[in-house]
Length: 552
Figure 1 (cartoon, rainbow, N blue to C red):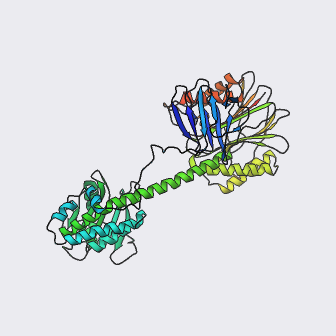
Figure 2: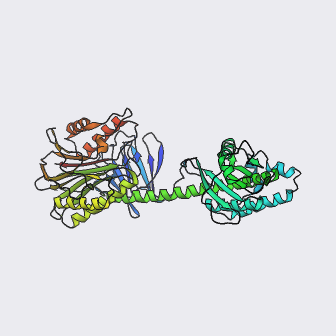
Figure 3: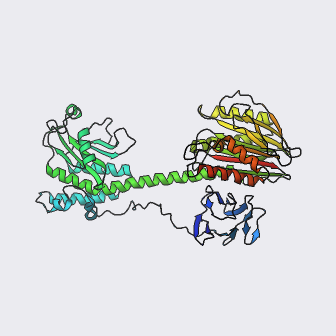
């Protein structure tokens, strides 16, 4: 994977993998690469992946970005060893060096690693250690040794957790005269904190539809880490219960599954409804030994399943993030007499905010920002639908009102009832500076006039996706020289600090009014800086998206 080697002004270095489609660099804590350099803008530059190549772009910084000593004016492709300079910070590009594994990486034993019973047994916390059992005068010492070997060999062939547990159940039936075997693992999401993973009757492969075991026995094993043997559960005052009585259970064996004395993660339960004295202390020793050998393998299989699921989710999340980033403009459009800037920060890995710059067939520039209700993956999926619908309507040369109406009808038909999108869209006529806009339930866009006054472009319709028959009114506004159009998501105005105070419209309006004379990127940086200063270390509670259009 390509990466950046960052040398900070104080001489410290940082290795940053280019794991995202877009990697932002700047003084802001929200940047992917945060550089504490006094000459760096808060959002200074970005590295963008295009296929197998990487490009460096300046984001309208105050002091510029250099590549190999030359000041950037347009995006430039990066090559091996290329040196980016931002203020006193030097960043070297490496197109394919190996990156050291993160310290957060989880090391898991290979699922196919051979289990040596003599080693695994030593991890057991059982009262009867295997060595003690083997040194005792048990008549079945030879059988026990054979069981240990068989368990080790049998579990080697198992791969996933379910297969391993079913194999363990089969070995229990072979080792002790049980009529029913139940294996349970901890699961905090379940009602009783336990999940039944295997429940079988002797001689049958189909699982038992309804399983009941004594809560007292389960508690004794799971909470106290003790093995249980009762020769007649009907008469045992410790465990006799309605469940035991109704099911006619007589003999019970139950042993914990664990690899250390601090963590019991499951249990093996075996019972017989037919006779008293079905199980003996010898059977308890045998089942204890089996559980000792099996615990390591079950734990490894469980961890392996978790790792596989986690890696699959990470891959899916990376793909979703990459797809979403491709929906964002590759860079601001270049239009004589105007400056454009757009930036989006997701509070999760992926978000539901959408912004776009689309040149129309008649030379007008369509500028849009949408905010999907909700967060995370579901919001991102709806955002992608909005992106596709808008671009489809633009390609069809649909007039603005019909564009919004058609997108709303599409989303209403294909969106759950509890989901909607607030949406602001405007067409800019570059020749005249005229704005034709529709506000579908979004925050009021702001126009900062050259003299510092602020105008609000208020809502004129329902959010998209609520009602298919909604009507939308068109508003008009004029951008004159020095004026700024500022569109934002509610993650800006509703950002909270640690005291749960809200950033609010008054602060936002003041920042824009005080900085309207700056460039589009300068205004963006000032707003982002004000947000960062206000929120401090508070976690973001919503996606933050800004779109700025300035008439020069």
